[in-house]
Length: 81
Picture 1 (cartoon, rainbow, N blue to C red):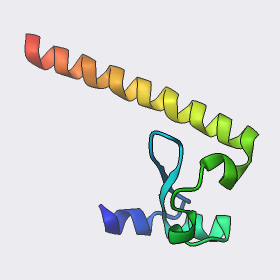
Picture 2 (cartoon, rainbow, N blue to C red):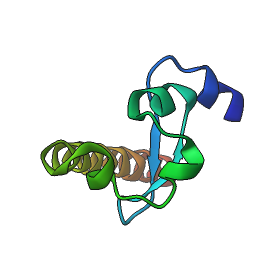
Picture 3 (cartoon, rainbow, N blue to C red):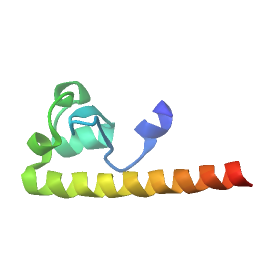
């Protein structure tokens, strides 16, 4: 997993539930001009600006909800099948 994280060409940002940065891959470090270590604990709003961060958080929430719904559907299918 760690190797794949570093090999991705896109910038990848990991956030905790408070929308604080927990890790950046090398591409994201270049995009934000900051090391993962320096970014750690900063809010995504500080990193991207409030408008972009709000949009990103909304997308993440939507994807999380869809993923959770798919997981529930899969679990229900498995348990009732």
